[in-house]
Image 1: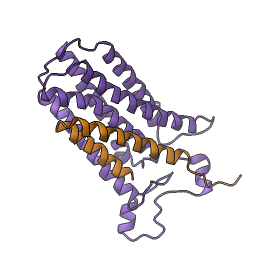
Image 2 (image 1 turned 135 degrees about the vertical axis):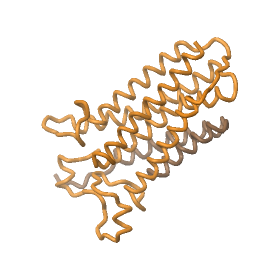
Image 3 (image 1 turned 30 degrees about the vertical axis):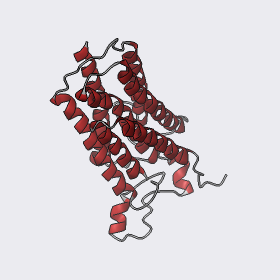
Image 4 (image 1 turned 120 degrees about the vertical axis):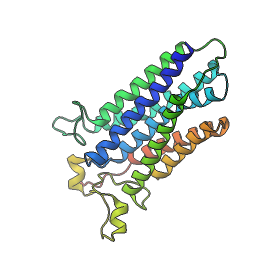
Length: 209
Length: 51
């Protein structure tokens, strides 16, 4: 059971990392600039993955008990609730008939719809984990796999920090409909470097979340 | 702003890695609130349209 709980935590982190890597591929491979809501969903997904990551970090330092499990998975549920709210709002933004949605669909659904599914799964998995809390402290042997998964999550967070800085440049907020990397535009000295479409025509019907 | 929140999340992970429970919990809470405030900013942003 001890090893099983550890494997579930590692799987949660790796699954989240896979989704985040898919989002990075859509950004750099397919050339789709993420909108502000997409970025917020990435943040919520990372925070949701921090729950099992925290559990692994605690297990690496000593025995973990039911309180540790509950605290870590509660963090995941809270983050998933925030993320589900954001992705749900983005789904509702494009729910009108005829709306093409934001970006290209992947496996039949848009990325924000997949994100909504991911957040629901996070809540469900965390709930099931909390149903079967250990009755006493357990000693887990945290190996290289667990450490690597936490390290991978850290690298993905750092890459996202750099990517969003390049996209937003020296501005506080991203434009609603980003169309270029503002930092590169500014360094090249392009004038009117809003890096996004904010005109009424562009906002009307093509609002990219 | 977005990059700063990502760095905050990274700092949370580092605090967890180093075993700083209170700091990690506090950073997690601050990160979550910051994400919610950023969402609130974008969700309540005035659309530049004339009806």
